[in-house]
Length: 431
Ligand SMILES: Cc1cc2nc3c(=O)[nH]c(=O)nc-3n(C[C@H](O)[C@H](O)[C@H](O)COP(=O)(O)OP(=O)(O)OC[C@H]3O[C@@H](n4cnc5c(N)ncnc54)[C@H](O)[C@@H]3O)c2cc1C
Image (cartoon, rainbow, N blue to C red; front, top):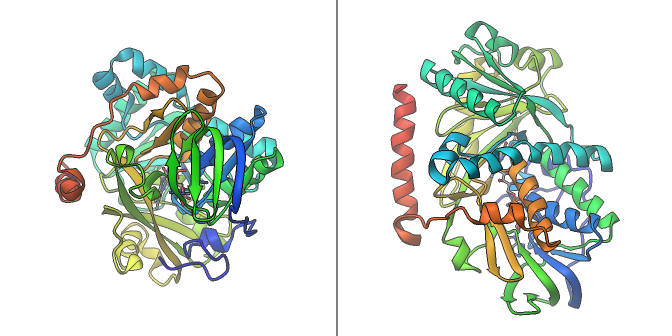
């Protein structure tokens, strides 16, 4: 990973360069105690820490690198409501009762983000509105089906977009239509997680950076160990997601790290970028391996896509993403690319997050499968609720089966690549 020259320890992203808060937190040294020890300072861990601090718990967060080092500080910044699998798939798989319960929670992640931004005055360039772009009539039909289904669960922010209206959201002739979500939106994700972390610190949470957890003793009083310190806690929350490594094989075997690549152009002429994305909505297309893009507050086009199963990156990130950007916006042929980076998210076989207990007092949540900006906020809060003794919603999630990848650790990558190749081919053929 190329690190940021102006914000060491982070990937060399536009986010790291434009972070509001570049303070380095101390490394954990010696022994300390807390009600709760959180492993990982991404959206999940910080969301849980903030929920607990707001309710009077003492919390220590241990982050192996920097706050927001993982997917939370590198993603497309798109507030996408719902889950990586549609609610009718959830109903078919797990029964209508579970779908109703998950449906009730499916807009909450976005609400949590907006509430925290307002409560704590977090500067993260929050903009409302998202556009799902369709390449084919089949994709339009699927979106209409999703819309009808969402509406049954109370989502009133959706509207279909005809071919002639596409230009309001993206000035490109690639799409035949789509759907907008007025309750979607976009943010500067690193500034969001940094703002939430600062809010948690304001309520007494202690965050240690460069404090990778190397061991965890479970039992009545769990002990979390780093190279130079230990935390004794009543509860431990494991929120390391795709960066957890092989520390806890029982849960990491149920997910696969997958990389996605992002780049940011130079700041564009205001008129040009307003012309390309007039409504300033974020855009994601409906392909299996999708492109996602949006405007930044300083008028760059931030464009993501690509996929690397197992978390492997292509050698030339710009070489992968730029041709896709030019297919969408040939107008940007001469635009300089200032930043290109990648990050790993955690994919589960079911595409549904994996939440549960490793013991009576060690809980985990991971595997938001590419759409995690909202669900991590929801599930972090739900981890906090479970520690507070309100495990009803936690248990709904924990009851969903998490399956191991076929092929085990050795063959899970090639088998998944094969599956993705097949779905990618169907997108190319438009079938
Ligand atoms: C390139 C990219 C683009 C994306 N775009 C979008 C998008 O536009 N919209 C959307 O909804 N989702 C998107 N996602 C997904 C979303 O970013 C993730 O689902 C979400 O950020 C995961 O948050 P998290 O807190 O669970 O994990 P992370 O943010 O990865 O945080 C985990 C943290 O735990 C730390 N850690 C791991 N192991 C240890 C250990 N042993 N000790 C201490 N610390 C440890 C890591 O250093 C890391 O900081 C994208 C993901 C990527 C990679």
